[in-house]
Structures are given as C-alpha cells and as structure tokens.
Amino acid sequence: MRDCKNQGADIITMSLGGTRSLSAEQQTVEELYNEGIFLVAATGNDGVTSGPNLRPGPIEYPAAYDFVVGVGATDDDRKIASFSTFGEQVDVVAPGVGVESTFYRSNSDYTFLSGTSMATPHVAGVAALLKSINPSLSPGEIKELLQSTAMKTGIDGVEYNPLMYGSGHVDALAAAQAIVLESTISPSPTIAPTACPDCVDGKVTIKTDKYGEETTWKIVDSGEPSYADSYYDGGPYPNDIESEYVQSITLRSSKCYDLVVLDKYGDGMCCGYGSGYVKVEFDGKTTIVDNFGTAAEKSELRIKIGTCGGADDAGDSATTPAPMSPTQAPTDVQLQPTPNPTTFPTTSPTAAPTDSNDNVAITILTDRYAEESSWAILSLDGDELFSGGPYDGTLDDETTIVEKLELDSDGCYQFLFKDSYGDGICCGYGIGSYELSLDGISIVSSAGSEENFNEKRHYFGNAPNCPSPNGCGNGELEGTEECDDGVNNSDSVGSVCTTQCKFNGSMMQQGNVKIATDNYGSETTWYIENSSGARVAEGGPYPNVLGGTIQERSFSASPNDCYMFHIDDSFGDGICCGYGSGSFSIFFDGELAASEQTFEGDFATTTFGNLCR
Image (cartoon, rainbow, N blue to C red; front, side, top):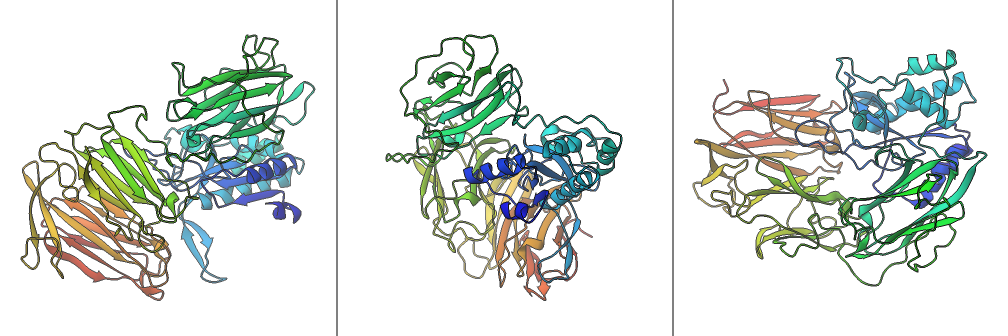
C-alpha cells in the first residue's frame, strides 16, 4: 500500500483479503487514510446469502478495517451474490458475478469471473470518477458520497438487508451528480475526527482472558446498538495468552460515547478462563472494569466515555473504580502479546465450558493449514446446533484441538467436517485427522486418510433408526448394501458399493460424484437437481494443481425421479484436454450413470434416474 502511495496513487483497490487483523497493516491503513488516500477492498467469498442456513462473515481484512471501504458482490439483478461474505463492515455492493476480466494464462487472455474481487474495482472506478470531478475530496467525503447515493433496492424491488448490502448498490451517475449539484457532504461517521477544538487523546486497553478470539470492542455514539458505525474498534485477539492490547483514541470531550465490549461466547473475560479486564483512559480520568463475566450480563459490556452525566463516565468528574493492579501498559499504540507459559485449549468450546455434562468430544489433529478446517453439528433437518473453526493458521503442524459439548445421546445428528481449500486434511500438507466420540465411545474417525474433500458428512446418536456414521442421510433408514460384484461389503476391491435407504416408505439410494479436475480446478463447479429444480448436491470450485486432483462427494436420493447433473467451466474451455485430462463419473442406484466423461466448452449435462425419458 505504501508503494502505491509513493507511486502517486490517490485510490488503492485491493481484490484480496485474509482472516487476521495485523497491527502493522491496520496502522498503515489509518496513516494512509489520514494522508488522503481512499482505500477499498473485497469483503470475501465465504458467505451464504440465501436458503435456510444464512452464513455471514467474518469479513476479511483489510476490508474489515474502519478506514477501508468494504465491498460485497451482486448479480445482474442487483441481488446479493450467493457467495458474498456479509456483516457489519460491508459498506457498499457492486457487480461481481460474471464480470469480464483479464486472466493469468497469458498477457492477452480474458475470461468471466465472479467474486467480491470483481466488485471492488467497480467501486474504485467510481471513486476515481468523483476524484476527477473534485480533486479536493477527502476519503471520508468520497465514502459518504458513495453511501448516500447508493441504490437501496434491486431492479425487481427486493428490499435490501443492510448487513448484506451495506448502504446499497453503488451508483456512479447519482454520485457524480451529487457533486455537480453541490450536495452537502459530511465526513464519514465511522471515522474518528483527526482535529477539532475540544478533541482529547485517550487509550483503550484490553487485557484478554485465555480465549481472546471471543473478544471484540468498538466505540459508538452513546445509546447506539453494537452493530452501529464505529469510531474505533479492535479484536478478535489470539487465544492461549493473557495479554494487553492498547489502542490510542481521539474523541470530543464534550460528547458522550459508549465503549462496547463483546464476548461472542457469552462468558465475559473474567474469571473462569483468566482474569481479563477493560481500561479506558480519557481526559485525565481512568476507568477499569475487571468483573466482566461475573455479573448477570456476560456477552456485552458498555462503558461511558466523555461527558455523559453519569457517575461511571471515563473523562467525567466522577471517582473511578479502584484499579485491580494490572501490569501498566506501555504508551505504544499496539503492544505485542507476551505468551503465557501455561498451555490451554487452542479454541474456545462452542458449548458452555463450565458445564460438567459434556458428552460429545471432537478431536482434531490439524494439518499445516488449520485455517481451512471447520466443523458443524446439525439436526437431521439441517439446523445448526454447534460449530467450530476455522482455526488459527499459525498453529504448528499436527496440533491437537479438542472441542467438548453436550447433546442428548438419544437424539440423531449430522456431523460435518469441512476443508475450505478442498484438499482435505491428509496427507499432502501434514497427517491430519478428526474423531467424534459420544458418551466416551468413538463414533466417527477419519483414521488419517481424509484426502481431497471439501466436506465430509457423518451421522451419530442413539435414536432408533439413526443412520450409521457413514450411512444414509436426511433421516432415511439404513437397509442393505449391494455391490456391482455381488459382494455385500464395502471393502471389496474393484467394486463400488451403495447403501439402500428407506424414507417415508420409499427406497432411497446413495450415490457418488467423482470429479477428476484438469490443471485449473478453480474453474470447475457442478450441481445435481431433481425434476422439481431442487438441488440434491453440489461441489467445487477446486484447487489449481498441475496434473489435477480427484474430488468425490456422496449424495442420497430417491431413484424414482429424474435428475440432471450440470458441470460448468468458468473459463469456457472444459476440463479436457488442453490443460490436463479431466473427467466426471456418477454412480447411482447400482449403476454408473456417467463413466469418466469429459467435455470442452462452457458446460455439460447428463441425466439419470428411473423416471428419465
């Protein structure tokens, strides 16, 4: 970013992102903003914006910083893209589906790509347009123009969700006309003023407990909700160490603000897992709260800052609570954490850690890319009950993580283990594995052999007719196994086995999709739809690997229907044969519906099932 500024850039666009906040990066972003540089970045492509299981962020950095405009993606109808990561840090959205772009295969290649990385340059272009009309515009004024003129609905009139759309869809014409018409522009409310007659410098110090990743904070106008625009924010922080983090602040002494400290797990910062505290130094006064977690409210703490008329205001004339004798923080803006020599669990459990009735244990041995691994426990209806990960990407290879939680042993549940990159957790980048036990009995074990997958699904629980761990899905009842060589076992060499399942009186079958990618697996996606248009399964995109990879996914469906398998190549050259020899195979209802088929061009389809004509 510094190099861009040194080369004379007024606007820096970043189609990139990561999951970790870095103090050096955050400081550089703030400095560049104060030097008049407008920064814009992609929010990420890990959201689920439709269906029953919406999944928001986390918004990636640098888009998550206050001084950067975070951009989500929309489709041709100005609806939020299915993959667009959403949350409080989305400022605006822009076109990000099927956008023509240069490509990496040669200096003259073009293709159509999708992602928030495609949306971000649209916003940067509009910012450049505004800057060309009025070169004196500050970054805050540009942001205010973009947000105040953004369209609040799609062309079909669908109302927008501010967590998904931010202020709305960027509108270049409206923003430019606002300058021409000399509309009043006010500085962005999310940026703290850098100079004013009654501004006072201060500090916020956060001392974390052992689960720093649960802790975040922000400063908002007094009385505003925790998701409101913030003047400053911080966290989440690393786990396993109890350390102080210091942020300098500059606020108006005549105003009233709330410092909102959030604990996402709901057990505060004190005192079951360490002795965390919050300290505010402002206008010559100091406030320390060292009991967040022992009071009734354990998920949110509010401290008044400025002139608020209350007895607990930091900076007001009231007597502040007695300090708890923490180590005095140095005056640096960012303090590097000092490791605690005691070893603690790597991640906070998703069920109450104080509950002694935990009967489910999930043990994960990470590979070298722990940040790709996550898991979830669902009901048979698909409702998420617990989840964990992604984990700290700085963990050493083969780090053991144990998550404990409580479930009714007599229920029936789904256990999903996911690898976001699609190469599993074994064996190219470390010998990772996972295991789930119920009531002390191992139910699911990967046995260190989980290669090349995006998602693995298992079933567990003592409910009558609960599927076996690797058996039928969606509440079907397990029946008999049949193999194409007539041997009723899943170990027969050279054969493919399926499990017959019963559901509502009809037989269900388990199938399998096998994708052999070409060198550019990131171009390949696929899905299966039934005759009603409902999706039964989907997969991709996959890693780009020279020579390709083998990707498999199982599914279950009634044979008494007709299904369409649709496979896409985003570049338009298929999966064979210019850049590797890719193919696809489908096994269903005891038969190979497609055997090592390939295609060239944009897509291919095939149908299977007893009711296909």
